[in-house]
Length: 173
Image (cartoon, rainbow, N blue to C red):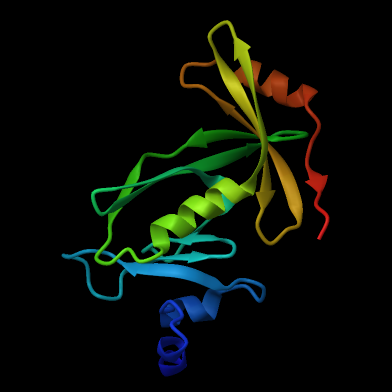
């Protein structure tokens, strides 16, 4: 299969990833991490998200921020707190991935993160504000309402705003 991937110029797929991809998930781009990592440590962008070196996927709807600069892909992943009609997001620490040969990976990550956003609306509050973002959830055919408070914004105020907002919607296929 690897010879066919090379012949068709498909991105390389590590063996471990072939075993865990969902039936409707496919590889879009990949890149090996720069030294001193072993040659098989990679980032892999798929239709559903980005696979990290620890063999864990972040869905596109949970990538808060992705930037490309000086040969390094920087990612911020969000975690969800389920609410009644939405999810409250908070960011995990920044992760940096120096890439040996980035290829199409940075461009693919940017495109997929942007494509996951259906709409966004800002609501200002006395102590900051919140973003209400409607995003596609890969592989589930849903749009999810995400509430992202600014740093320092009262989380209870963000939860109240989320409670007033409509929840997820079905997407047309």
